[in-house]
Amino acid sequence: MKIRILVWLMSGLLLPLTAWTQSADKAPDNWHHLDSRQDGFNGISTEQMYQFLKGRTPQTVVVAVIDSGVDCEHEDLQDVIWVNEDEIPDNGRDDDGNGYVDDVHGWNFIGGKDGKNVHFDQLELTRLYVHYRKKFEGKDPETLKKKERKEYERYKDLEKKLHEKQEEMKGNV
Image (tube, rainbow, N blue to C red):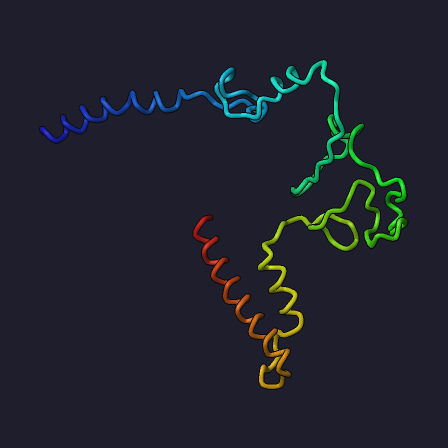
C-alpha cells in the first residue's frame, strides 16, 4: 500500500515537469534570419545587416558557392549572379570551349558530365571506390601487372574503409 501511495505521489510531482518542458518556445520558420540578441534565436541577423548596409556604396564581391544547389532565380541573386556571356543556355554544348557544357552561371562540380545535378552527394571515398571497382571487380589479382596490383590494393583498401564507414553510419540511423 505504501508503495502505491509513493508511486502516485512521485507521479504527481513529475507531471508538472512534462508541462514545463513542452511549453518551450518553438523556433519560427525564419529562425535562421533572426538575431540572437533581439529575437533570442541564433540566426545570421539578416535584417540587421540590411539596415547596416542601407545607404552605403556597394562594392563588387565575387563569391563561389560550395553547396548542393543554388536558386539562380532567387530575388537576392537573379540580378547579381554571374552570367557566362559566351555560353548559350540549355543547348547541350560547350559553346565557350572551356570543357564545361552549358556553364551559364558557373559549373556544378558535384554534378554529372551532362550538367545535371547529382541527387545525393557522396563521400570522396565512395567516388574513388566506384572508380576502382569498375576496373577491378571480379578480377584475379594474380593476373594483374605490378602497377595494376598497387591500384588493386588501393581498391581493396577503399572497399574496406567504405564498408567500415557504412557500418558507422548505420549506427547513426
